[in-house]
Structures are given as C-alpha cells and as structure tokens.
Image (cartoon, rainbow over all chains, first blue to last red; front, side):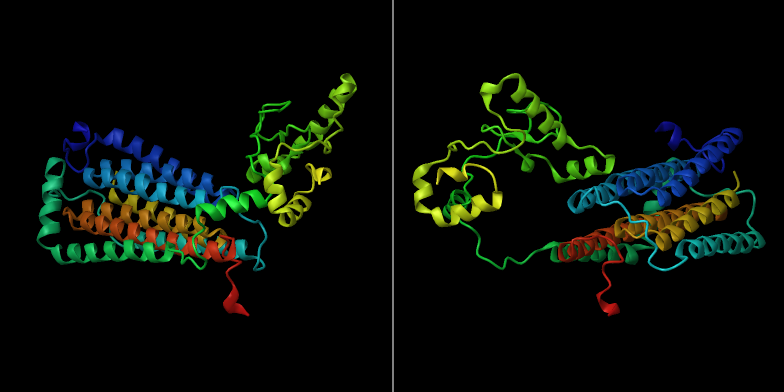
Length: 307
Length: 99
C-alpha cells in the first residue's frame, strides 16, 4: 500500500521494473482475454475476466492511479464479477455455449473484422503524436486522492450528482425487472400438507448415501424397499455423467444383482421395485386415494400393489 | 513505459472484447465481453491522463466504472427476465421479432 501510494516521477516504479511488469501484465491480460472468448463454460469466462481485471488494476497502480486501482479491484472484481457469478448460479452453471453457427461464416467474418479493427486503430493511433514521455505534473501518489476529490467535487460535481440518479434508477430498474407477479394465491400450510399427502410421498426421499451401496453423489439413492430413486441425484450431475459417458445407474443395478446373488434371502430384484407395503400412512391413503393413485402411477414404482 | 504502450494494449483488449461480442452466443458471456471493452477504455483513459499530466482522465474512468456497474445491474436483470420467460440464456433463442 505504501509502495503504491509513494509517488515516483511519472509512475510509481523504477523504469526497468515498470517495463518488466508491463510486459508480464500485458501478456497475461491479452492471453486471458483471448482465452475468455474461446472457452465454452461461462464460469471459466468469468474467472478469466477476473484475471484481466486484476492485471488492469495493477496497471492503474503502475500509472500513478492508486485510487482507480483499488476501485477496480473492489467494484469490478468484487461486485460486478460476483454479480455475474450470482446470475450464472441462478440461470444454471451447466449452460455451455453452443458451437453451432447460426449465421454462416460468422466466426470467420468476426475474426476478420477484429483484425481490421486492430489494424485501423493501431495505425490511427500510431499516426497521432503520442508523447513518449509522460508530462510531469499529474498529481501522483498521496496527492492523487486529493486531486481526484477536488476535481470530482468542483469541476465534475454535476456529472457526479447525475451519477447518483443513475444508480438509483438502476437499482429500481433491477428490482422491477426481477420482480415476478404472483398470479395464483400463495399456498397456505394446509395446501402444502395436502399436496404432499396427495403426492403419495409423505416422508422425504433419503438423500444419496443413506441406504446406498456407494457414497458418490451421482449414485442414485437406495430406497428402503430396495429400489433406487433417480430424484435423489441433481440434474446437473446427471448431465455431467452423460457428458462424461458414465452410467451410474447400470453400476447400481449390477451391484444390486450381485447382492441378490450373494444373499438370495434378501430378495432384491435388480433395480426394480419390490412389492412391499410402503411405510406410508394408510389413513391419508383412504382420504385421497384418487389423486394418490395418479401420483403413484406417475412415479411408477413403489407400493402400487398395496391398494 | 510510455503511455503509447498502454494505449496499444487497450486497443488489443477492446478488439478482443468486440470479437467476443460478435462470436459468443451466451448472453452472459456477451455482457462480460462488453465489460472487457469498458475496461480497455478505462486503461486508455488512465494512460491519457498520465500523458497529459492531469487527472481528468482518471475522473472520466471513474465515471465509466459507475456507469458500467449500473449497466451490469440492469442488463443482468433483463437477462434473468428473459431466462424466466424462455428458459435459455442464448441470444439465438430470443428471436421472436424475426418471425
């Protein structure tokens, strides 16, 4: 911190260090940027963007802008990227980008446009006379904060006030956009209890590992009656298994079959349902037997013979 | 390092962001590429501020950060609204106006 704030001439560093740091950070930033538009997973994109932003923060500090460096880390890497990751969590981490080109040759033309943009800008900026040496006189180091605050609250005070209106509008807009109108009445506790009984599943299903033969999360849980339930496995994990070409269901079925061979008195058919009386509650069954049958049929397995 | 180096780096980062906006189909990733472009602009502003020897460029970069934060908030809220309606964050799927 004191190093960052201690002012040098044009930058905060010796010339040699500044050159070395610049090239290291530049290569890192450009590499992370290129990787960002190449990787398919959105989460990897966010992490690579964090690398770019941290590199830029270090560059701000090297250029005598310590305030902006810290704001970059706090606001961008801290708040904005966390917001990205949060929305990604809500939308679904598994949403990988599709590689189908909807417009033919789009990537090719985008690459060509990018190259031409780089050439255009570099040639244009190269023609403009950019002084190679920075002018002295910029408020550096500890004066940086004083100078910035003086500018913000004198010359730029009107844009600064407008900024507050912008932020309030953005917060309100986000609330309005994220708000969902409730179209049906809110279910009461009685409704929830009734629905639970009607579904035929009064008790929660055991999580993976309770009666399990395996303790991996992608293995479906074993129900007390010996059958397995697919609902105990998160859909994201199932999708990952499919992507990786694994089949935990077949493994479980094979293990159940092996167990039935070893201990035949257990009477566990491979992966299927065992006709046993469920540990449900017969009274509720009598009340809502109509809907319960449907629920059973939809779930397909357990205890349909008890009726 | 001279400010010109930083400005050329900003040009390259800006172009990477622009190409990313053109190439990617996931709306979140497109937003991230826009953020990359804004960051590149900030780098150029800071370099120009150092080149001219005053702090105006840094103030503008600060304002750009504020506007970018507001933009991200509203943009991601729109994205969530679209996702709620269509169950997809791909820009190809939000094509109702086309037909």
